[in-house]
Amino acid sequence: MMRNIKKIQSEIQSLANSLGIQKFDVNGSFREEISASSKNKNPFALSSATKTTLFIRVWNKNNQVGVTNTSNLTTQGIKDALEIALESSYFSSKEVIYEFSESCLTPQENAFSQNENSIISPIQELANECIKAESLILDHDSVFKSVPYNKISESLSGRFYFNSNGVLKSEKKNIAYCYFYPLAQEEGKHAREAGHISIVNGYQKLNVLECAKIALEKIIKHLNYTPIKSGKYSVLFSPESFLDILYSFANFINAQNILDKKSLSTIDSLGKEIASPLVNLYDAPLHEKNVAKTLFDDEGTNTQETEIIKNGVLKNFLHSSYTAKKFLTTSTGNANSGAKITISPHFLHIKSNKNAAAFQDNLPTEPYIYIENVKSLHAGVNALQGSFSLPFDGFIVENNKKTSIETATVAGDFLTLLKNICYVDSEEELTVKGICPKILIKDLAITGNG
Image (cartoon, rainbow, N blue to C red):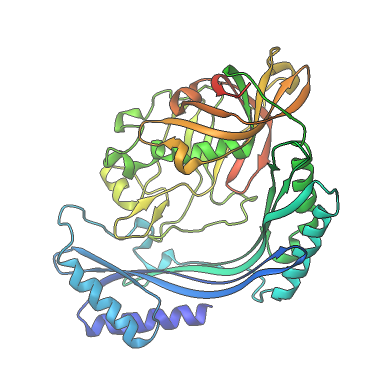
């Protein structure tokens, strides 16, 4: 990998010199991926793909920036991309001035990460495992009609960054994942669906059958269900469901969104209590349990753990190098490349409450709702207003008995939700999107059909 990246770096530097380009940077990625699904215990939707992409920024003599991307790695393809970026720079903003990240000024900032595995598994092996897992579910009981959503995938991927100052950074990952979402239907009842996803470093560590068993256990719990009445309930969120909502409203910690006035926060929000004192939120891209660790962002800025909320108080926003300059601070390493640099969290971590009393001692005495999974995030969230109305899979819990809910939605205001957190569990759970304990929130509106 390094040999190929250095070859691309050398060629772009040579072409830039010939075109009179003195300042540029390149954010690149490559990916080799295979995936397999099964249908009716037969291989289905086998696929294999390889792609390399370069995102190029070029500064002209007026310090304006032009951008382009290309997957054509021939000499002519790269030259064309540099020329397009240079030409487009003269039409770019003179007010929004991008610069190299502070951690990309000298070659001393170089960083490299190499994954041990460099060979991808045979696709037939993935297909066979998928068939075994699907069969395990379908053979369990006749109520399991199909597993409409199932997949096993493995990828070798890498990212790299280099610029005209001689800085070079690269990282390589080997990630495998699988998911199974069975569909079950008993006579005279509604169809029910639930599932599970697993993600690890390397296919050899992926326990496909265990993932299928967990999916099976989840769907079985939803076979017997009951309607519930609409009203205000205390709601216990699973780690997955709470993180889904948190990511949907991530504009409240996004410095670029704040500058664009498309955020639930303002510059003056720093230092204010925006959540329950029980909430401690971090962006933790380098967490030891994060299988997709990221050493640097698309600007080449080194990533770091960023304290966002401490004891309910907003401490920091997430920054790119541009927003950091505007806020008179340093970049947090959360930039994404594009015609306009955007910002997003890497791996959110809500820390557990080590001083929490026993879980059972904090549960409401009246019936409460346990939300396992929220749905329709694309349609049920108004990120600019802070409101949400989301269907969910979950349970009503009464006298320590959990019964699946037939159908219901949860609605509320995100900032109010943060302040109404009344319990954060002492046990953290790893999910695909981050780490989070179970979280209890009082007085949320639930619409049922009972």
